[in-house]
Length: 447
Image (cartoon, rainbow, N blue to C red):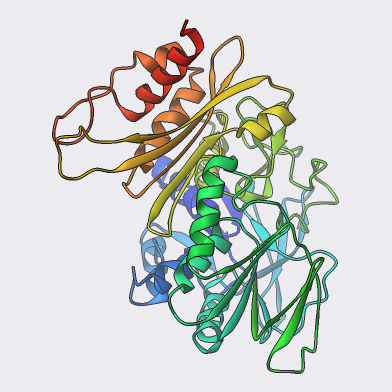
């Protein structure tokens, strides 16, 4: 069987490797429009935080490793046409010379692009959208020289960039159209804590403001205009509005209303011989009535595994997603999973929640660390549907526990009596998750 994969980022590479592991005789061709593979788009933050000494090292796979597995990779190659009836693909190289390749099965891993709606962007010397290795190199160079930087978007990338830039003597502005940062993942209790840390770091935070344009762009210090004010800056990074890249297939595959490719639980599109994965599709969210566009790498890799298995006839269904995330910002680990209380109300769910700040260790230990925890439960059933954590202690593995609990429809009462370990030098007899559930349960039934 010959399988062609368009896109050699996280999803395309995972699909290719899975196909070869399942059957080494499968012919796999990877087509990538960029000049490199496997670059982690948030690598710029790792480099700025000195977790790696070179940006080019933020990769998890090499061309040589793919070649050793007999995976053909075509770089600097742009697909121009897909002919589903003939099962052929037309592509061109950098010299615009065209070629044709046939397939038995096709996998779309075209990912997402970043863009800003209703904005006319100046040259990339002034305003930059970044995702690839080359664009990240340019951003790093410009950030070193810039003294007044504006970051548009208060999601993970925007907040992580603010954290990485603090303490360098630069004027940093973070602009977010919502009224809180990380609003897709956090309720107000933890979001407010992060907001204060951003402000305390010296970053100028502009919430509830949308960028409407730029002016004086010929000047060294040009103006970023928001709905509320004008901000002077010499460099702007746009970190918003990732959108699925469906240009190649929008005329012959069924799409969802949000522009993603419609797939079934096996990652199969409306064409039985074409599969789609990653940021080009929408995902079923636990406790939601609809599928959503959620550009997270953990979703990408899972959907790629499902697609590859089913391409070779091994039935595997995609499970729900809880959009589980974690990061480290401003010396704190922050993690979330499931629906926020705000999202749950939007979904039409009646919920109740608890927010607590709990000590991790018993009081006799010199080391004392706190965890801020928010848990959201469905009224009546007491099922856990969301969880959020924040601490200077690395509590990120606990968010996986909460994700599994949501997936298995674990109740408040079950969390109170869940079997978690205890070590007198590490934690308390009742773990953080059980203690939060316990306090909530006591509050409900206290006379």
